[in-house]
Image (cartoon, rainbow, N blue to C red; front, top):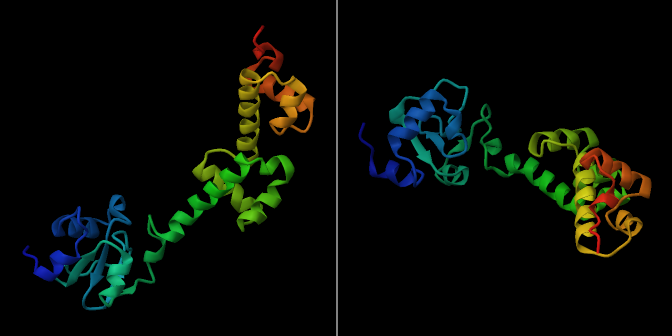
Length: 198
């Protein structure tokens, strides 16, 4: 199929017209978020995975971004919701929420506050926060905080002359007993066994 000059100008730079059209007709998930197709007859633009019956190829143009499609006079499809495509702010939002949560946990937020307080700080509910962390990080915020505490304590044991009690509190443990229990669970050894003999 031949493409007109206007179609060539709207293509994403790394894709050709035929590839985009085949991906659109096949509803290929691998291309979701990489381009958007505008249908000239309806003036609607869609994601490649749109569940609506595909338009005829001669009526379709392709755009690298949703903004480019809107600038060309198309409006978003209400079925495939281009605003939720991979790479969009809505799609990145969940990963961004988890990244912000990870930074707060790294700063010791859960050493001073609860999971509910972390969820409130991130603007989501506690159960939703747990789902997001399990999806993006593979572990709960509490698990990540516990691992961070043990790793920080291990670094302090290796690099400082602080007492083990001082290390326990500096790493964010609420008590020396929890510090010892965490090391026993993680390393199957007490923290004192890591102290180098000087």
